[in-house]
Length: 551
Image 1 (cartoon, rainbow, N blue to C red):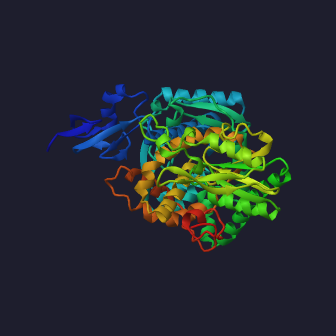
Image 2 (cartoon, one colour):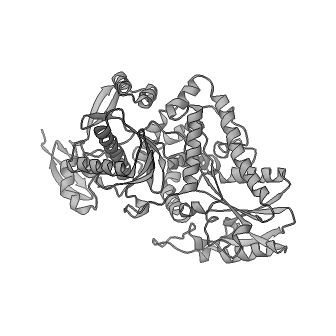
Image 3 (cartoon, helix red, strand yellow):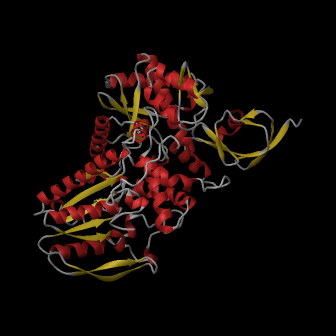
């Protein structure tokens, strides 16, 4: 029997003993990392550090300064937080992981919270970190896992496991507590010292941690009242509907009641937009320019088109401008730090020309506006525009909320709208379904349907898209006069139907296989929802097809 195997670790060849764990190997490489090594990939497949090396392979280590490492770090912090709370306040005390908020996650407690109590929880977590307690895997049969979670009154986990078809379930143990997480975990609490808890209200706080978008630092928390209010309204509604988790949605599907829920949700979505239209109409004397922005796949096209319809119903005549038509000519496009043309940056837009033409329109003049020729990379001035008495101008673009846009035009003449698909449902109370994943699923489907892109094409550009959002969209969300959630409570079941076959197309040797597998693992918990009952003016039609507005 061969006792030694040849491996390549971070590009360096080594001979190691068969049966060595990744954790043992990682100690030699820790000096090369800023944060504790938390995870590894073996032949491009992510593995926890408990993995035993028995064959020749390529190994790469990751700390939290990576997407997969960051996810494991967040999962570990969540488990650490749950254990700290239960050891301090008893088994009945718990937390509910709600949603992202300013580079962190907003978390609610099942008990009253004060800043003093929150500080004691943070100290308890740090004490558990110092103890460097192991986080270990335990495999149990599915029925036993359901009974266990029922016994500790974690009914959300017990319910979602009904939809897991595996005969055995992998639980994680920390101290004397068991939990289930939809992702990989760090080897021990010693990896989890990078966090901060920030008090928000008497039942909630933000768990903060370093991310690649915060330059791997924990920045001072900035409260975003608009976004927080919209999330709260959405969560209150899900509570009213008794659909707070994916398992609750699955129950509606399995009872054959999904068509009713779709109609209710679509009515609510239309009412949200109608209320914004009324707000604009009530201020029509001053508000001559409507600016709309939102991240990728937030449903800007459908929302803008429907808003125009609602404004027309009140006697206004909306005219639309896309900021994309005001791109500078391609040979003048700025380059990023990699020397590549940066189409996302603010300087890629001819803001001077946009401001000049908008001022002329407000003065009652006619302008010859551009339409951007993306093939040639130049503006072509072919669009005659003039604003009459009841006309109102809608401007859509990723920079629309940036204060630099039309800064010479008085604020009283502008109404700013921020759109985002803020996912309303979590998997259970300790595992959320990130808003970013929701938008990614939408984009994969639309890119495939309208542009002929495969999943890998979309995943390849997604990181750049996200970086652009973090730089140019999210920092200005508080500029909005109205924030609209474009996510639908039922949509994950619909997206599953369309995206699941596409995700299976990613080859095992692809760099993006792990990401496709991660999404598939979450989607398998969601029951499919047919699209027959979805109206043709729904936002979701923008992605799956069948929209009355565009194809």
